[in-house]
Length: 97
Image (cartoon, rainbow, N blue to C red; front, side, top):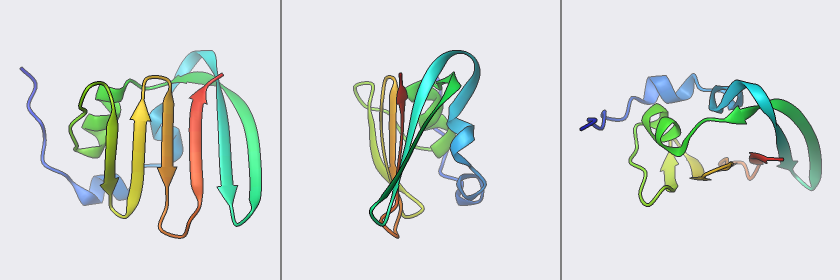
């Protein structure tokens, strides 16, 4: 049975959006919303699994979902979709295209 690791804030601070993406086949849609502006793009790759994301953040996934706040960032994830809302109101959404 895998062990849940305690949160490591220094590890989370170093994470970038690309940390949640696995290179390879597939297409992802990336949407960034900031102060009324929207930027939308697509890229190749796939989103890491909910369990992998939970391990990276040091949280526990429940029912295949993550809903938590880590280092001031609201994180919601489910299969094929990741949403992050930052303290300044900016939002990032990565989902399977």
